[in-house]
Length: 176
Image 1 (cartoon, rainbow, N blue to C red):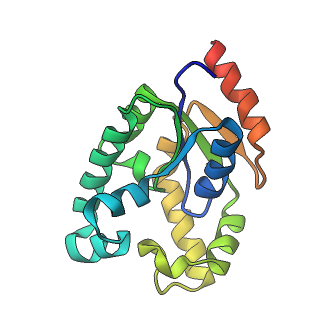
Image 2 (tube, one colour):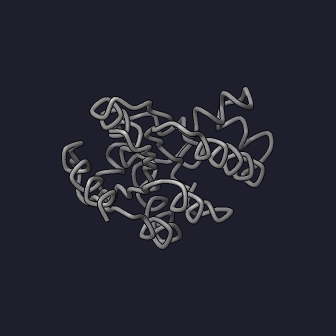
């Protein structure tokens, strides 16, 4: 592909942004970037440490700053955003102005299972929660973030996405 292409994946924590993003980047021959990892690298702190030491407000400001710097780069890449990224500091508008946004709309029950069986305790918003509490927290997050996610240029719904399916959607968007 000759045209510069920046794709930002949005969705709830556990929706598969990083996993799918790595697959898509490999398929396209692009770099894969994870916004949380970029923040950790920049500030030399884990996300959970930023939350506990500096609070969510500071984290969201730092997140917006790193997001903007990243999206203003001149190369093509796939970026997995944080689950809350689109909901703060006009980030969704900035994402849509500088990339193709893709909402990974995965059923809440599937995400809850993924989080329960993975490293949910490493995610600040899910630390110390049992399965039922994880599901309730996901529902609450979805209610507060759905408006922003639905502003995405492409929406993929279900549990299993293929890079090929998204490539068809991306080509369609680039032609229009």
